[in-house]
Image 1 (tube, rainbow, N blue to C red):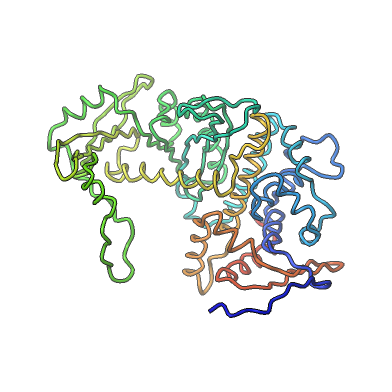
Image 2 (image 1 turned 90 degrees about the vertical axis):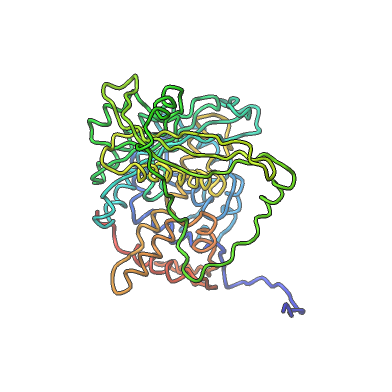
Length: 480
């Protein structure tokens, strides 16, 4: 099929092309939402804005990530690209060394000010969503290890896994998978350290935006028992995993048989066409052939009982899942094993099974963390101190936030409202690499006139109609 033979390359003197043509729409989004003004208004890192303002540095790092850059050095490619500069109306942008120096200027108050600027803009974007968007805000928190091979990075330490690096905390809104707060910590710090304060900040942010109900979720390290009474009094619903301690296991063992209900999991996906024949399980066949130890889940049941943590003044609802696991070796069944999983909540009305599913949905935050780590590269820790790497992490994660805002600003009304809503949800759930390929790496010809910057599309992809519809919607001012 590949029949091309006589090929040659020529340099064009008139047509000035740009591979990352979507950057114009993203910069328009930053102006449309007021992000540029918010950063310059909240953040004061530079003594003199000559020639760059704080927003130039912050957006320079975020735009580098959106254009496919993976490190600070990739900024040099943007800086040497005259067409890229013309596309943004810039005479020049900070070089990698200047960008690294900008990160080193940050103290903790400056990092908090940058996050406050982003969140102030975030609230304006949220307020443009339909009424049903504000029914409930589900806030997740989790820690993740950011390994580094450097030996001179201040603040690094050895984690519980034996690797050296940092231990960032991620607090996010599950509805849109936006990171609300990022906190860099030393590698040996506990996973839940400082999470309660960030939960409070996230609650205040969502209340300001207009969310009617708030739910906190976290795994067993985030039970936060010292704060549960206060959150309950504030009207916050919480669902936290809880360690399977001996006293809780005894409580579960003592429950009568009638207290347990079979837990029926939801199907992973609905078959849109005809069901296909399942392929042979190669892995399971090898396990049986080589007589490896194998754990097979045979049944699940759910029950509940009242439980009052030591740090609480009142009892709460403890939902427990009992997993019956068959321990096998080869094709021989050795014995059955019972494992318990506990979830502490103040929700006394929702069925226990639904609370289990709600708690399990928190695993979707693992996808967000993976995107921040490997898609965006926010946890690469390219600078030399804990605070400077924290600042870089917040600025790089802004690339993911801009992707979410572009999706939220897509119109979903009119004659084709159902299709537009499905496309909006698809862009919001889209992986970062897919978004970059579909919406950023669009070949364009850039024509700069005295009053306009024209992007002439030179290629087509299936998402182009969504891209153009979104850009047209960004022409109007944001009215929140």
